[in-house]
Amino acid sequence: MHRLLILPMILLTLGISACKSVPASEPIQVPPLTVHRPERPILDAVGQDTAVKDLTEALSQVMSYADKLDLYIDSMEVYYPAVIAILQK
Image (cartoon, rainbow, N blue to C red; front, side, top):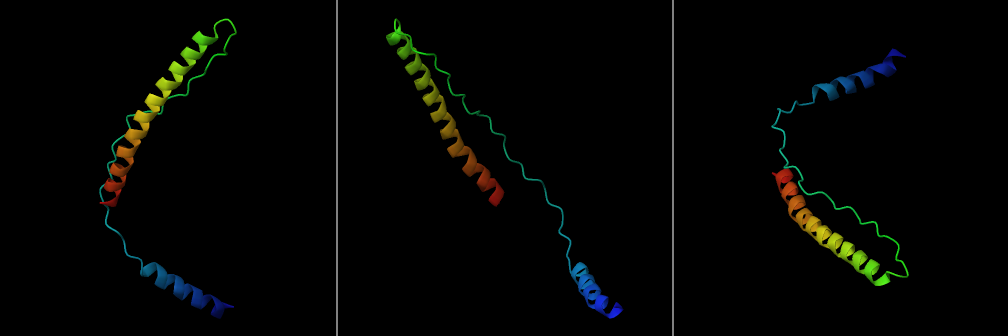
């Protein structure tokens, strides 16, 4: 029984002793993301009497959301490649 344990013990000892310690490096500094994703607007129901007014308000809210989302996506297209470049150094 002891003969069966000798080979694994030798391999384990060689494996542990062959490990090389890695010197400590500086932590990577990634800039924080300053832009937050805009919240989707919750549109009100369209009434029969004020349909044109309600639809105009809804269209205005959706257009405002689309503009904010475009700005968010543009900032993501700048931020993520910058982070990847920092991590690849």
